[in-house]
Length: 139
Image (cartoon, rainbow, N blue to C red; front, side, top):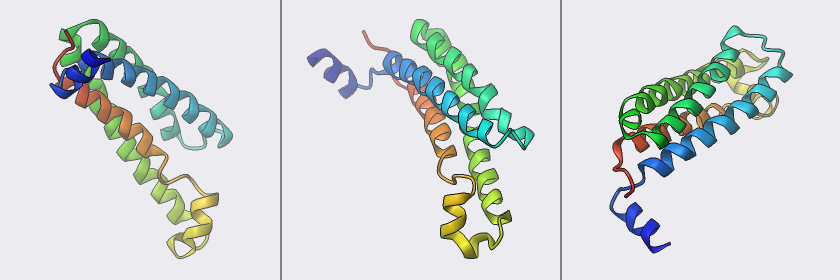
């Protein structure tokens, strides 16, 4: 445990955070699939996080296994995932706006419309991957 704390204190957390990015991408992709399936994938953009999620899993595992891939493939995949999360926030906000009453009926539309904060989870996974890419590798 002391070694783990020392590694974190000195910014050596690349492998662990890359692995956590892979796990986070897998769990998030599964959750998004179930939620978007409930909506019958009514908008083609609903497939975007389903496609980018496995890319994040592969990049996270690759970043865990290889220092070179942690500095090349992982940040590229993480940036794509982060951008997809930001896009999701915009699309969900647009969906709330298009509901009857729009933003004036905020409380109801937040509960019954697309979840505004859910795409931020995708953004968080992308941010974890970017952070893993700038940290030093554990020894």
